[in-house]
Image 1 (cartoon, rainbow, N blue to C red):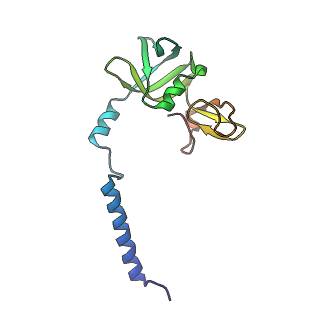
Image 2 (image 1 turned 135 degrees about the vertical axis):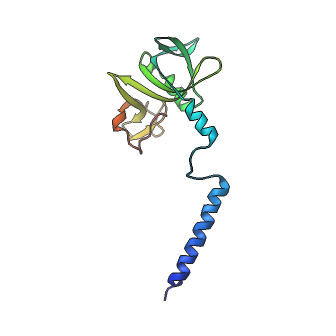
Image 3 (image 1 turned 90 degrees about the vertical axis):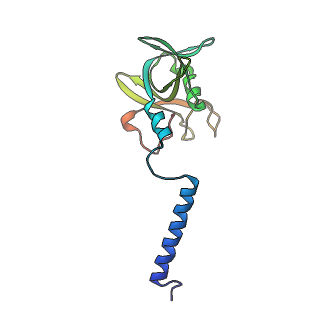
Length: 162
């Protein structure tokens, strides 16, 4: 004979589910709509396009038709990617926010080539390990290769630069 009858099992299930949902609620974890602060941050997102210029003295700049813009990022992986010499002179589309000092703080990066958009990733073909920033493979220590993935071929399970 089973440990629980059908009614007891259902009752126990619903009690446990209620407790679990209560824990998520207490931790502030929910699937509800974004808060006012998050919505305001999303509303402030700006997109800029231009050619990436990497200089030793002035740092990172994006050359746009309206002038050069200093570029930075709060995301270390994205900042390391922007500093990758392989991206120097490339056309980029950056999404982010303007800072009070006139610079641009990037939160997402896309490469523009022949009018198409590409996401970036670093990949070791020896070990089949992707990475989100330039550097050595975590396994074999060989340099990772910069790959451009067409935007229409990106899947949810891919490891990409933000």
